[in-house]
Image (cartoon, rainbow, N blue to C red; front, side, top):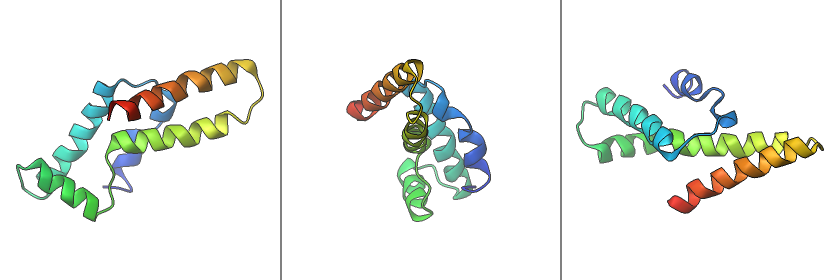
Length: 99
């Protein structure tokens, strides 16, 4: 699941502006899949299994990928790139401030 499904689910999301509702929807998909795999109805059990299998929530993965993307993107020295990076960084910081 980690090597096949999640990269497909997360492909290209680091370049897209996502709302917190979008990230929660992605989390719901992965937690639901773990609930089905381990035949449980408790989100806590699925979350524990995700930790054991080293499978972070998509919301965390997307923000980590976005930070890496922005680091590579910010290497360009064009004013348009700088403005886009600042806007994207503010969205990442707002996500972490909401938690």
